[in-house]
Image (cartoon, rainbow, N blue to C red):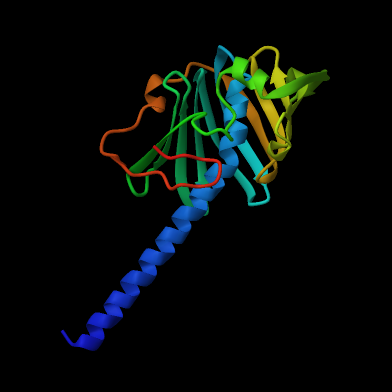
Length: 220
């Protein structure tokens, strides 16, 4: 093979690799924006009912739709981010978060609440790092909810408002103005039904990779 052809193939390969890395880091960055609001969401839900729902996330990075599965204290979110599927599993019982990328058959693992700038998943700990104020009651997506406003003791972390369903014991909507800017997480078309345990495990054949270090996060 001629040297010119070899160099052209190498250049094409590098360009594809660079593009893949950029897409990957963009998805990880979006995950970082979603992570804090979701961990806070789990912090204010205890022994919630088994449910599935359509998930809507809005932030400065765009609007994304997906599916949510909740079983007890564990949560699974499925989203299509810029054309690629990403699954995030929050195992509150193990204190870990798994990010699965089915297209590449890889996953990353991090400890929930492992960084000082993360909201912990323990409701008692959440009470120690901020103040919660009851605002009133509102009906959201068919469920009567108690509405709360939460302010972090650290001003840089911002504040959040969440609507907790009295029936589900789970926030069906949450708004946050934090380090990544304003965000909204909302669950619609909620169905109360048994959710399989298998949805909260890593499928066989997935390879573990290191979690990139980002502000406010610590990889495992």
